[in-house]
Amino acid sequence: MTAVESLPATPVVAAPAREQVPARRASAADTVRAYVALTKPRIIELLIITTIPVMFLAKGGVPNLWTVVAVTVGGYLSAGSANALNCWVDRDIDTEMRRTRRRPLAMHTVTPNAAVVFGLVLGVLSTLWLGFAVNWLSSMLALAANVFYVVVYSMILKRRTSQNIVWGGAAGCFPTVIGWTAVTDHLAWPPAVLFLVVFMWTPPHFWSLAMRYREDYAAANVPMLPCVAPERHVAWQMVLYTWATVACSLAVWPIAHTGWVYGIGAAVLGAGFLVVAHQLHWQARKGVSGVALKPMRMFHFSNSYLALLFVLLAVDPLVRRF
Figure 1 (cartoon, rainbow, N blue to C red):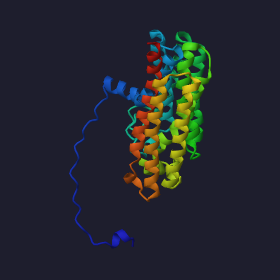
Figure 2 (spheres, rainbow, N blue to C red):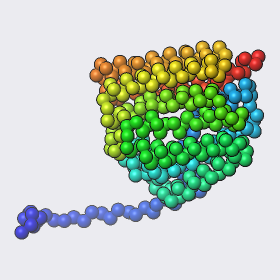
Figure 3 (tube, helix red, strand yellow):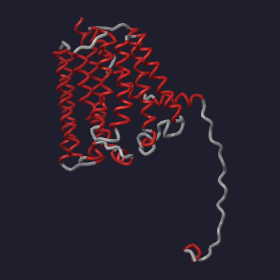
Figure 4 (cartoon, helix red, strand yellow):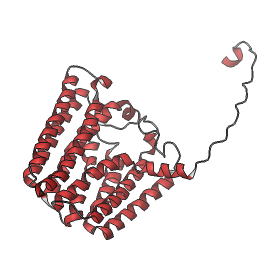
């Protein structure tokens, strides 16, 4: 006799049939919004902010309007390609994380095959567009950034090492170089130092977000540093990278021959960035953890810091000309 059979008989009441509501068919507007979401527009906004100001710096004033438009369009296509392909690679873990479960592939509003085709088409278009409309050096740099983000970061590093965002974040540094080469068609030291600014800025920026969503990354088995190290250690690493970021930003002053607007502005912004980073570390040392640590304060401030720093790069040559 099974355990089920040994239970006393109880009347079975059939549950009322649930009314079948036909699924709403996606409209053309819904489809367009889903494909736009695959490109992650909010991330691309930050990439554009680190591209166009460098064009002002390279020109020593206002760059050619057509070049700015061409770089913006090509940059969006290239970054959109990388982001769409990243969504395809991460489609399994995106469903496990609160922060990403509303992405198109996680919501099944776009099929995996369609996302791959979309990402590859954008990549080809961006390469050709930048090559013919700007120059082939900028085009190849954008293609390298795309491949690095999708293959090196998304496919190799992200799920294997807690240093994933340190090295993988290099993909987000390429816009500083592309903005320069779009105007000059050659490489130089100023964009290389700006590359380092963004490279050093990325870990404290992203780790603060990962601290807030640590449970998400743990559930998805992604070894972000906040998932595998104590918060005190993570906060200290963020302080070190913040100091490196500020040092590189100040090095731009003599290397790029910027004026007092950038120099003083970078010093003030850097001081604020360091204060926020040290406050986070002090709180972690006192034993504060989780949401009470307020890591998103660091995240939002880091966004403002980078945006304003690059705005100074654009304003500085304009002030010096007058």
